[in-house]
Length: 361
Image (cartoon, rainbow, N blue to C red; front, top):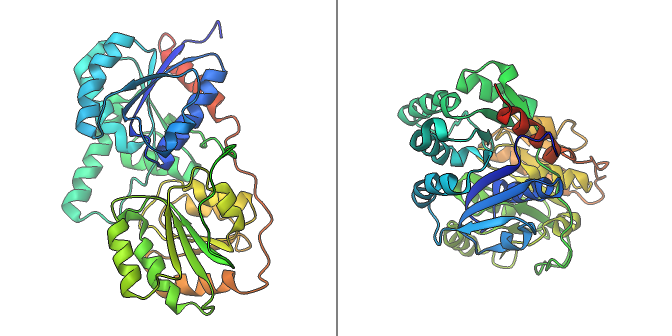
């Protein structure tokens, strides 16, 4: 600790309403505090399921409302007042706020370290949007001191899109999920069920999974999707239209999804795009097979063998159904559990922070 250059770490988020980026941020913060560092967390809205995961000992600054504009506008004054040694941007959704912070504070801005949390090569973008996004990514090295990817393939993608040497991208896995004592288990249907975990947003394409359910070989299989989001009303309407009210369940956010994952027959992630989906690692760590679309270069780094699950082309509904039928067949052998990486993530980040803060870093 005496040699640490990054004594005080500041990080920020829009809210604690649930999300893999924010959950990983809080796990890292807990590790940094345990290592003796001071951590300040700036959050737009401190309400939500993740509030119970905020680590003891963190200094919390609440802005009183969500929104990137509010968060971006507040950060420069907060950083001036609290003088952190380093700023951690927890995902590429938040790099706009980092750019604004660096521009406003100039040479007085502490080093900013950002994690790549979502796909940088986006097949969902139209040509003009894709061109603008590529130009934006190429500007990232101008305001970020260090960039972190969660897997080697994601680091390759970051180097390619940001036009950086591959050696300039650090690779640090997210810290592994741990059981949360006292977490409430949502109501689950009897019998075997297929599970989806993630925000109810268009990116996740839960509509695709719901539409597949009536076409499965086993009509007894039910579907549970854990998560909350703006697409709930549309998904509920789809469920009603298809007459699936007794087979599809949307219980909302789960304080701890691990016990639910452990009870599932299989886990499906059919997104259009992802970063490094932690839920796939969580399922495989419990010996639960996964069915995933090729939504990220990291998916095949996680599902490394056909014995673990199936990776299918994005948008191929027939392949999704075939994979679901394969893994949901009665008596299908489960994968051997695969340990989650990231046990040293907090320490690895601290080493990176200290290097960024050191003279000449």
